[in-house]
Image (cartoon, rainbow, N blue to C red; front, side, top):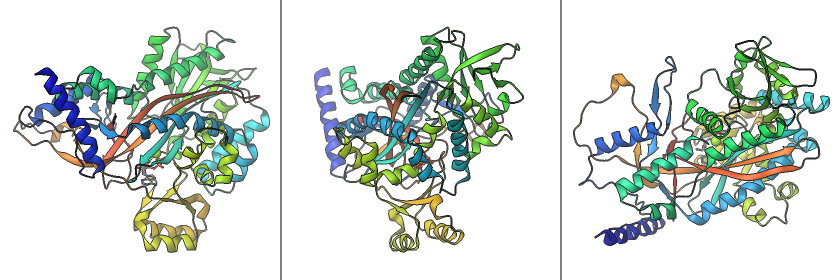
Length: 512
Ligand code: ADP
Ligand code: MG
């Protein structure tokens, strides 16, 4: 009986893949005869909560109020070779970002002409610190390359993030959640699950990278501590606290402080005589900071506090290891993606002897600068384009017909260089069972009636994390490694897959 059920299961898994290839959009289904959807939804929400797949409720008027984040019930099928390719490309991407970050001329040529106030302010900090001379011996990068898989099964890069790459902790938990649902609602054995679900150690890798950077710094001061620079109001707090807790469990001697720009003002953070970064704690003692981990400062919205920019500069001038340094942050500006889609420029930054250079180059879609002729192209078929700015954090893109109005305003204000057009990446939707964001308590349903499972068409965005530590002088790469993965899905037709800024739902790849 047991053997037969495994056989049936194995058959249905490969059938699932064949059906998806044939565009039949089959998903893993919930056995309606065995399970009541209301109970399943409740069970999965509670299990997800137990794993910390939660956030603060928005608006955050009550810091004690948490809710479960949206998740898919089962993982989403993905071709193993496509997933593996994305994994294989990450070390080359890490190196490319590093090479851009140390090429002063390229940074200057590419970024100075952008009429983007946020990028200009970052660039000013970069110029100030590079003229003064870098005090930090090393720089840490925790990056995430985001991809969509197009209708022809090609991996296409959406963007590369070099600052405050979120979900590195929660995604590892979502993998755990999906191991549970596969086992208990699909009857898969541990061996079957191991065969289809890739190990995801993003939380461990990110925590270990921060610890290792701290150890390198603390050769000079053994009592130093790590500073997380965070937003005053952070919904995605669990993703950050889990890194903190993981670090404390791996290295109980390391102290970690969470502070916003406002918390650091009025002399709470200062520079010592040798550019040491000194944090005054609640008991008025001064602690030297080894590593500054930015989970803020990625967009202008993080600089609302009046002295934020001064503080960002002060942090950069210090000898603490920044994750990321200002130059690694700048190397992640979207403008570079458009430039790297030119093969001649790409070859300057990606070693052509790298076994992956052609494959990496093929992940770029087409880009267009803003011009009257680009507008003419868009008018013919607006749904083929996305209008993007260099801003981070989600919700900044313009899609479809709305692009034309926006283009007209850009062209008439002569702000062409602040934006670019990107080819719209069209995906093959798959059917999936979803658990949406929890409704607020007042509108919570109390009905326990049987409801059919709510299947939806979704598409997904794969993120691959990378970790790199480089010496500031000499540019020696101390490590360059993969650091786990993330899958975010959204209802097809929704525009953006950001979990907080868009319609994103946490997911896991089911490799076939
Ligand atoms: P950011 O996350 O910094 O705001 P992204 O480049 O990741 O900027 O864009 C946000 C979202 O918009 C993506 O997660 C994706 O859902 C959607 N998007 C971006 N570029 C494209 C594209 N070329 N085709 C289809 N969707 C896109
Ligand atoms: Mg993004």
